Each structure stands twice: as structure tokens, then as C-alpha cells.
Image 1 (tube, helix red, strand yellow):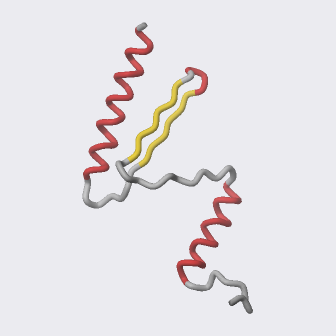
Image 2 (image 1 turned 90 degrees about the vertical axis):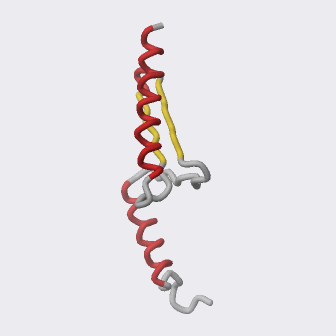
Image 3 (image 1 turned 180 degrees about the vertical axis):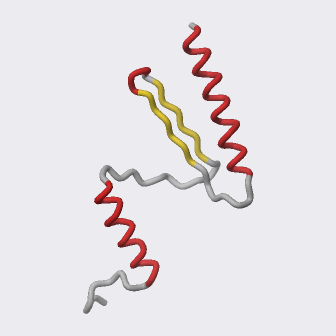
Amino acid sequence: MPGRHAAIDLESSLATIVQAYDRRSDTGAVQFALASPSRDWRWHWASPGSQQPYFIASITKLYVVALIMQLQDEGSGRPRGAR
């Protein structure tokens, strides 16, 4: 099946590229996921030992979560009067 052979070549090439980024000292854990639903194709690669990513469905939720995490990091994530 020629299409499957091309997909294997693509997956191998993608893995080579992300492994090169993963080996760099100036990057953290690397994770990539690609999909082409019309071709019924999915590919995922993650650095060994990397944490499971969070998937957020909307930009508004992403923004709110980013603000909460920033406030937590700054130490001001608790509501006033909370213990």
C-alpha cells in the first residue's frame, strides 16, 4: 500500500526532527501531536518522561487558566480572606 509507506516515511522524518529539538540544551520537554482526520492519520511524539499535557477546548478557557496560573505563581492566587 503506497499511501501507508509514505505515512511511515513522514512519521520517521517527523520523529527525527523532534528528537533533534529534544536533545538541545535550551529546550524543555518536547511534545507534538498532528492529525489529518480526512486521511485517518494521527501522530504523536513526546520526550521520554515528559508530563501529560493539558488540552483546553477554547481560547477563553486557555486565557482564564493562564491568568490563574500566573496569579498562583505570583502568590496572589487566593481570594481575599481565604486561609
